[in-house]
Image 1 (cartoon, rainbow, N blue to C red):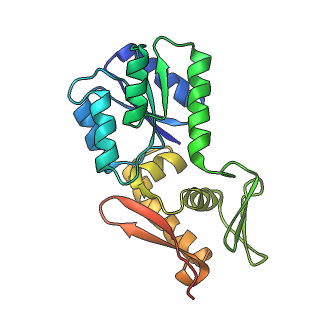
Image 2 (cartoon, rainbow, N blue to C red):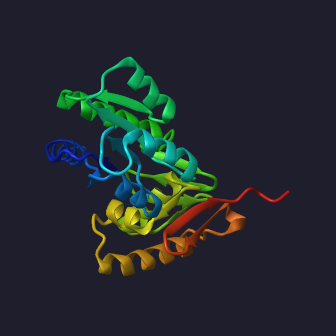
Length: 231
């Protein structure tokens, strides 16, 4: 998963990046609130770890902006040195999902990050098997079955299909997909992404009559849309 850290203290950024990466996720960081909002518009993230006091927009202003400006927003952990009960309630009421007061033990921070990511991944997202309409995914064997017929897929094709099904009806940026599947945003991966999406769409026959379709969001990324059965 992809985590964005917003903090203007370099040592805190290093601390959080290390934790996020040790948990197996991708971490990016911004030290300015205005730069963060620009990134939130053009990129997809699963979690935002947000400081209160930053240059540009502060944490509360960013939370308020997210509520009014983002159709799809990441989960938010506010992590700050403010510990007054009023500050905590203000942050939670503004849209934060959790609140951590600095400094906090490394193990506690890691546990809170993991809990938030699990909570927002959706029920069954990390089960060995999952069913989405007529598509049955086996994450151990990395296979997809449709109406009892097993579809042959490469490892990357399966990972991509799994990512889309887990995030159905959520628009994913190209960078998010490439960093999640290929751990890179290089130009080569961009061409690779288009090719793999074409193969996944064809192999799984992702058409409206089968309940799902992948469509391109121009200038941003892709979205697997759930299609309601026609009456």
